[in-house]
Image (cartoon, helix red, strand yellow):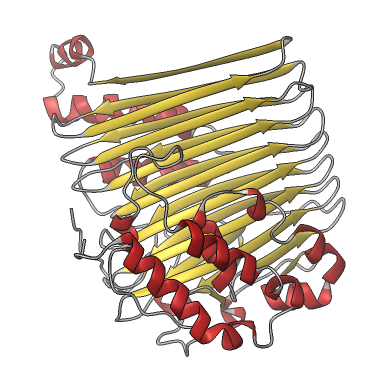
Length: 454
């Protein structure tokens, strides 16, 4: 981290916005422009989140922001054909593919279902103005995280994805976010996903770097599930270990909707994941999973917030970490049950294994309950591999390293098995094994063989 203060970075980013406000707003829809000033004012007043505050108790955000980054307001000319440099390493994974390069959609190399809308944010706001205006920044504006405010102020690029009412997408939609270029760069990407009434879809989000440059990806995705919608969202994070990522997934669930969210973090020097779910309609169900495999000097922080605002909703959370070397893992899980949210069923669990004595894990599961007819539980464990199980396996002629690998893979399997795309689950398991064996867990078969950095 360079020797700069958070106040200096805050002032620099605020001044950058003021200098280029006209260009940032140019040709952008009013629904995006009218919230920029409030967002930058909030960022200027509060600054970056401080280590020790409630949301960032164990994480120093300056690890991500304390570097010199370039920032591009307009879409840059592609330096390489993204279809050529990136090929999914799951060759039999049949998907619709949307490629986003440095925040901007690569329409030429993307395939979009005929009955689904997938376009740039500005196009979505212009063509579907009523829908866009109803949902854009509605969830984000309620958050007190100024990394989200920063995104709202600067956002020009990103994906508007709309699955119309009763549409069942016949195969997964793969969203590939690639960061490329030879210079350090900050990207504020904004996405809006709306799953219409009775719709069904599976989304696979893959985050990659195609160069060894330092990147900072500040990604905010607002997602709305209309009544009876079913959405699976699988996120695979695989940035080079010089880069940082702040991923905020903000979700609203309406009546009888079903969500499955699963986040796998393989690489990235600094990663902060915010998964926040608002249960806004009765009989909504959310299953939220995460698996992180930090090594070297990686810092991976998973923050979840589930707001049970209405009765008869169910949420289940399971996050796991396998930590090695001098890595740091953080889990902060918060479940709020409001006074009217009777018949709530909320379960939260965080389980962690430290392979190295130098690895550190901080965990803080929390329940805040204001209703009396509920079924809620939470818990966390931090430990090491079971010595008795290791001894048992060694007695059966299994080498120590292989025995450890088998135990770690079994530990991770509880999260992997929740993936409802069989071939992706199989590849997921292979990537996890590669990562645990210290190999680069390359998900993209790209021409850049990223250097592994601790």
